[in-house]
Length: 281
Image (cartoon, rainbow, N blue to C red):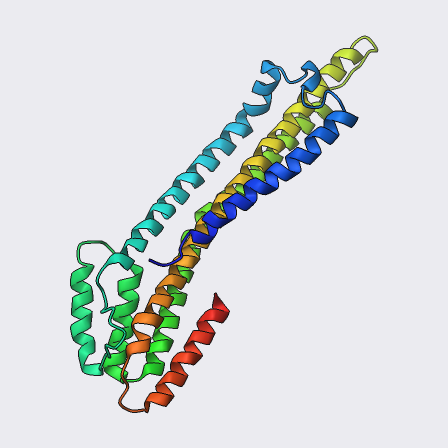
């Protein structure tokens, strides 16, 4: 199995260490120099929290955030399904086995049989495309180009499939700013004609300002969280494609036997592709 998702798992302990270090230093310092900051001084009661978390704009933000999370969950499940292809017996694991151009069609049929009924899989499609190119051109360099081009197509499709999530991540701050504008407009639209009404005016204006900044706070918090989830899934998808390219490099390209050139030339072509792949990764 390849390394998809391993980097993300390794980064989580570092995140926890960063949280513990920063919180362990900043919280005692704030509590010493600014006592009462974490208790809230009685201001953050249940009614205040409800006004912060519930409202027309907040509900719209929750809908957009939930929609995006459901899409990302489906993307995560698809990545896990694609990773199952590495456990299939698609190619021989014998390092001494060489693949001739006349063997390409037979190996293609074997790959098709192994992946039959499992839905579209990136790795078998990449192998079949490469083998088809090898059977036609009988050139290892053409196979390298086919692997690279097909991988780029897969990456482009993955980026395009994230367009809805990207739009929702952008729309969250916009919805929050709508609430801000509504709150500011409400506070500015009121007037106090008499001095007696001034206290009532200040109270109502303050309530509208709370609405304005509460919407922005909730929207920006959800946007940051959504962008983190989006980054994790996009990284796993990119690692998946890189793992597929590495699989093709180790188990297909390295075993192709091109009778038109010497073994030394073949080794040079394979080494060139290895360097190109490592630079991309």
